[in-house]
Each structure stands twice: as C-alpha cells, then as structure tokens.
Image (cartoon, rainbow, N blue to C red; front, side):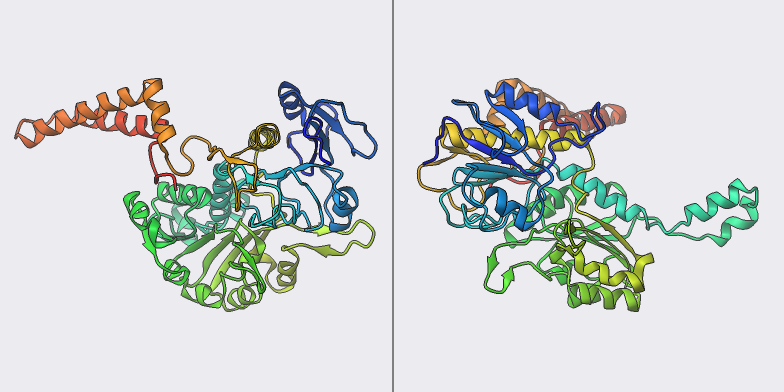
Length: 458
C-alpha cells in the first residue's frame, strides 16, 4: 500500500548540467528546491538509503539507462513516482502515483502505470513540462542549419587568411554562397518547439511553411507563416525541413508518426536540402534518408536521438543506432547528436526539474495534475497547464493575470496612442513618422513581453 505521506520519487536523469565544485553535474539548485518544498534529496537508491518519515523522498540515480537496470531498480513498485528527461522507462517499471517528463514529448515514458507514452490508461497520471526547453531546442535547430547553410567554407577561408594567402579583391569570387533570406524552411508540427523554430527562421528572412492540423491554419497564417495540409506539401521545394511532432500514439504497428519523413517527403524537397530531426529518431525513415543522401537530394542531415551502450558488451541500441549505418558512405553529410539538443544550457534543465518536482508533489499531495498527458485517472483533478511566458496557447487565466498586474492597461494605452496617430494619418494630416513608428514599436514590444501572441489555449 502506497504511503502518500512518505512517497519515494525516483529521478533518472540529470537535473543539472553545469559542472559543480567537484566537476560533476551540479544538482544543488534542485536539491535546495526539494528541501524548500519539504522534501529530502538522496543521492542513491531507496534500496540502500532509508526514507525520512512524513516527507517526500527523492532518490537521484541519473546513470540508469538500460531496460534491465530500470526494471531491477523500479520493476517491483519500490518507487511511487518518477521524474525523467530522455531515459526510456519500460512498461514494467512501476510508479503508481505518477510520472513527469522534463520536456514536451512523452514517448520515452513507457511505464504501464499510466498506459505508456501516450498516457492512455493505467492508475497514475502522466505529465510533462511543455515549453520549458522549447527555445533551447529551437536555437540548436538553427545552429544545425547555420553550420552548413550558407555553405561558406569558413575553416578553409580562415586557414587562407591566417597564412596570408588571400586577396579579397581577387579571391573572394572563388567562394560564392547563398544567404538564408528568401529560402524556404518547412516545419513539421506547430507545438511549442515547432513554433519557436518558425519564429527564428523568419528572423533570418526565410519563408516558413508549417504542416499542422487544419484547426491551426488560421493561427499559423495569422502569425505570418504559410500553412500546409500534408508533410509533402510543406516540404515541396523547401531548402530545409525540421520535424517537431513527437512519436504520436502507439498502436499495434508502432508509433503513429514513425517514418513520417520518408521517401515522399524527401523527394519533395529542393535538391541538396538540409534535413533536421531534433525530435525523435524514429520520425525519419533511415533507409530513405540514406538513398536521398546518396542521390544528393539531401545535402546534409542533422539528427538528435538517444544512443545507449551496454556496459558489459558495448552493444549499441536506441533510436540513433540505425543512423550509424549511414556513416561509412555519408559521414561528411551527417551531424549526429545523442539526444543533446534540448539540453543546451544548465538553467533550462534546472527550471524543468524544479517544475517537475512541483508537479509531482501537487499530484501526490493534492491530487491536482498539471500538464496532463492522456487520461486523467480516477481520484485526480485536472489543474490545467503551466508553461513559460509566450509558450503554448493563451487562456483566460493568462489574460486575467495581465489585468491584475497592470500590463493590460499599459497595452491598452499604447494601442490607443497608435490608433490615434493612424486616425490622424487617415484624416490627411501630415504624418509624424517618428511618432507612429515609436508607438508601433512600443506596442509590439509590450505584446511580446506579455506573451500575447500565438493561439488560444486548446
């Protein structure tokens, strides 16, 4: 019988990335947060370290990775809840009071306690922290693109300059390149990360085309992007493509979105296009990508996916493993990361871990589930969503907070000023150009700072 007054919560991923005083990843901020919330943070297993009665006990084992290790530690119901980031939790790992994934997708949260990665069934709630690492991931997507486009050979030119073997007037013509401005970027998915990627691509002057469900069309076009009704339509003529859909629900044939970026999508791209998959490795059909790299249809592919190594045999597994078969023929055209794109900075992981601690405690102590994925189990209440400002849909609670904080009044004043100056312009008065531009800039900044952009909360 679970004791909710002394729950055991397993943490299976790092909750700090920057090196601490001893050179190890620093988890001190999360340790302090757990203490502030009345909990106890243990480094080690609940099999070895006793729980403190009457408090939530967090057990930190970030080096667990294989299915055998996870089942040995958590297959018998020793832990009541779990916090994970990238580690895949097998169905047999049991957490009867819930789980939180640090980040957006929950495809790695395979425990049967909540019915697997889509959270359909089970006795426990499945939660995530949407938007917490969206900007970090989007920035890494743009870094992957900028590493190869524009295709200026920076290292070669640097060597020539350093050797004094370059004359700008004579030699620059030997290094033509093309800017990102005016190119087309296809984004597959309009969630928090996909939308942030679209915004960054637009900042570089790219034409952004987004595939999403029809209900998103008006909002996509309202933000100035192009909408596509299929992945192939989004990819048609695109110079780069980035996928941000998640694996989708798992059925008898596997995950719904597995292999979505396949032969049809790749063939629709502009010749030499860049393919970026910083979501889930399974979303790309690896043999189809290999064929596209061989033909030159794809000029470069950047992939970020989990890779696991058996400690005893060295055998490799995980969704990155199939991509390794492409290296003998296409190493120069590949950039492979071990599911690191979302972990570009220490503060992002710390913020996500703190939020995950709060969510799991709220579910255990109060029965309130925030950022629910899938079904709401009996005995719990849905507490809605928590996201960073500017992420996800805007709801009535967000607008009410703006009114209480005075931001809504400031926005109203700026909007009225701009409207008055536009009225004067339409009435034929000589335009005060500087005043109009200043009013427009201030209103735009105020709306952005308040997070009033995007679409309404679903």
